[in-house]
Amino acid sequence: MTRNIFDFQKPERFVAGTVGMPGERTFYLQAKEGNRVSSVSLEKSQVALLAERILNLLKEMNLPPKSVVLKTDDAPLELPLMDDFRVGVIAIAWDPQTQQLIIEAQAGETEEVIDHQITEGPDLFRVTLTASMAKSFALRSNALVKAGRPPCQFCGNPLDPNAHLCPRANGYRR
Image: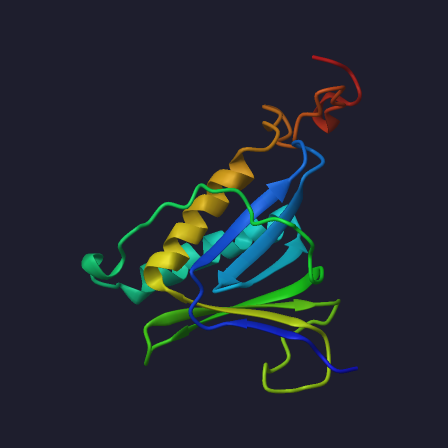
């Protein structure tokens, strides 16, 4: 199967966003470069982990403060919104020569990301980001994840507006 590779070397925009009400939201990664826009859908936990790993990686890189200038992007996702595929696995890497972060999200259920130069296999969404763009993405993603349903004070699971049977209450309401 010939693979589609959505490669964004110098994106103008890279964001995470959602569609739907809390508890029923679909999460997306979206990149825009010129007239090209690509979106992939993924799990909320994948967005949260990606943001966490990006912030940890940037902290480890110990970049000079002037090199990470934050630009806030609170705009909604670009429309029409259609996902190119559902993300199975995500990889991130730091390129020390260019001082940029590379994020690769691959379709399917494979355990590892297949090299982007291979023409056969699952579809791949690849974005190269500056440290500033990566940090802005991570901060927006964290806010997006926290904007969902509040957690139960006892079990930590999301509270359902209709009813929440807390496992710590053994089925009884507190």
